[in-house]
Length: 282
Image (cartoon, rainbow, N blue to C red; front, side, top):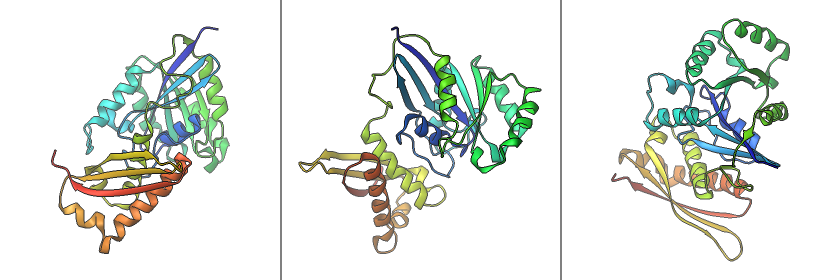
């Protein structure tokens, strides 16, 4: 049986649920989710391998980066376009509670310049009356050419199977780009670093989390199968140090404990996390 693939970009506004959708599709946490903007900095790949078919999903930064970028990270726009250029098909994900016809049509027209097939996926359908979706589809159909529409709840994994079945029908003959057992292009070190970055996004305010980097120094399984991790939080400005440490070191302790619990859940083993705060000299 010849192998087949399909490469898919997941595109949408910040907080539309792109990373949640990727995690639901893959069945594991491979991309962090957070309410703050531009949570996804790197382009993260998630994989579904079913028999002879491989679906390759690109989790991209927010669609706002198609326009003038005002991000702390200049790589966001590059990573968005990389995902678009490498894909065969684009999933445009919409938070149905924040439906805006003008904005959707404008973004779809920009995406159409890539000459890729586009499908619209309405997310968070568990939060609305589903009868309201069909009129929106009819409204959009008068302005844009869309291959297909889907309604899902990425968080509750509703409608995911129908979406996957559709994508599998679109696969074409090609050698696989990833191995059978792989679910992402990112390794465990990247994912555990992301866990700590996600904790920083949750517990720190304003621009601080976007100006710090998490670097792994030690990643080692002990004889009893526990996992020992040492990470550096690299700060770009010395004034952040006092804020991250908190009064009597309480904030950094909270960051470590929350991240350790997050990593333990994902890695499915007991984790010993150590965090050190350093000034980034780069």
